[in-house]
Length: 586
Image 1 (cartoon, rainbow, N blue to C red):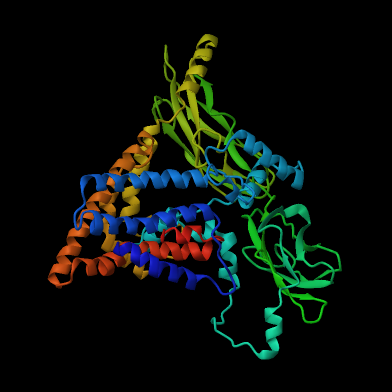
Image 2 (image 1 turned 120 degrees about the vertical axis):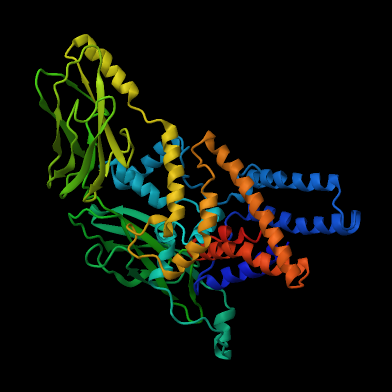
């Protein structure tokens, strides 16, 4: 109860004060919010009923059972409303593509057709996927922001919300006003302008756009709504993001004129095309100073007065992969060098490199082959390279031995083929050494393909081990990857929380039993922590002669709600909607 009261009074105030000047956050899923808010109020009323009216100061068995059943009832109701099964009329916004692991092929085909219709059929599948990712960013939940806030407080591994939400965070990072908010009195001469309704409004039809670097220029439409009988205008200007003026786009600004009766006009921004492989970059176009040619009347900006344009780089360095997941070499009477081809497809711009190393399986390094490691270098426009592995002459009778060649850590902007064995982080080629026999060749080829699979439990063990590594090091051991080293506060909070981090690292990862082991162990850990916090709070109140109810709304509320406070503040600043931030209140 104390924690909830703290949330209601403090978190919502922090969220309101954190929103940049001139910006608004709306609740998108209003029906879900109404459901959870109603249950939140009913929870307090139910406590009053059972503790003061029905059975004062005693919770009877039937009251406890009914209270417990309210929770799954809330979950089911909220889910039905969220899916549009209840109150379908509340789903006013056009359904957005949800890019998740269970997205259907039909949804992908429909989305791809729309992208190719807009950008042309010449774009690659990789570029289609990147455009879809920009236009359909992942929805961040309260849990996501809470995890990020907790890790940030205790020096844990960062989630880098600024990278995932760069589109919505641009206006706050790049050009927010430095002037403090203040209240200004209204003169009597200005009163007439204030009370009159705006004649029209200007806004962009969409919040995000994505274009290829080679498009030449991007045409962005601006829509005028309201009274169209009078000429009007609005000022526009481009704002740098990760895309920079001159190098990535040409700075454009000026007045966009709307003649009488015209409801739509276009802003044209030239895009600079270069041959350098680079990450996708973005800039924004901002509307300001709306005007109408009618004395005494005014225009306003709509909710979407800023559009973010992502430039998809099409100077692709390419994708590196082996020709296949398996390769067979035949034993000879003497040692020989087996040549393994590495292909480069989907682009050949610039010099790229990839490391490789051999790994023994049934074939033993030094006996069946010579261990090799190094780098494969592709020069500009080169599309294939070779890895040489020395195969030893070993007497073989009725067996075939295998070893692996692993590609990893590509450089120069190149990627590894995610469809190959090993995924996007590694490409694994299984090499089989067998007898030069047609019959044995057919059998061993099938066998090598069937055996080229990683045991899924190995992934689970790797993840479990990484939990302890991330718990032991400050910021999860990301010092080498991050440009900024951990702060002093990160280190202090890390060492304070280190015993708890190591304790909770004992919870198995979600790779086992479909996540059920992790779920059950997490509930047990939460119960233990809850018991410890309750006892410590009671002891503290006893020592300080503070009643339990006062302790609950001060120390306990502050401690349990501080992560929610930081999580809600981050969501309020970076999310275009208020759902994730107000979720802590309801």
